[in-house]
Image 1 (cartoon, rainbow, N blue to C red):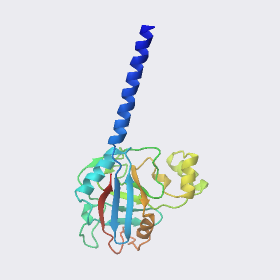
Image 2 (image 1 turned 180 degrees about the vertical axis):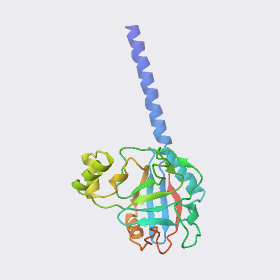
Image 3 (image 1 turned 45 degrees about the horizontal axis):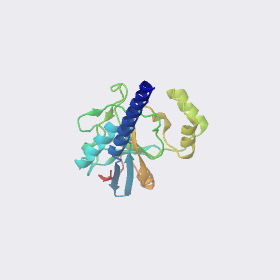
Image 4 (image 1 turned 90 degrees about the vertical axis):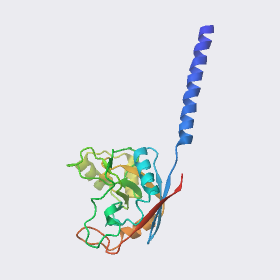
Length: 227
């Protein structure tokens, strides 16, 4: 009886410590919210704690004012708006953009529940042939505008990429929209919670056919607004 009591007591202590550590971890986690200011309006995003390397790197760059004055240099309607290339700051109109960064990449952090739905924030990267590990650019990112998909179109994505979509994912792509063929290929590390109409405005601007750069520069400044 005495031995049983001590065993139960020991289990209780271990369980309590485990619960306490989990609670402490949750309390110590910061939930970062970001404001992107542009000439066409403000976009507010939340950064996911489940992608900590991307979250922490983005916040570091924001605090360094790395993004201030940088352009949304690549815009494709019904797809996404992309920025984060430091070479776009105060650049000439015909400057080739898309290759700049802080000089490092970030390991991929694929989280299955975070998909390329409308409003998703994800990291750009180099192609598979030079980047087989699918590492993310250190600074370039995009926000999904996307479009609505039918079941037939989602089936075609599965056939092309091999990704099987759950019913919930299908419903999202059919009712909210997005770009499903990018799932599990690019790290999604946040999402828009306010200002999706500004994403639409940017996505609808007139762009050059040669490189999808907006004909009129769209500069950004970014700051942390809550944590």
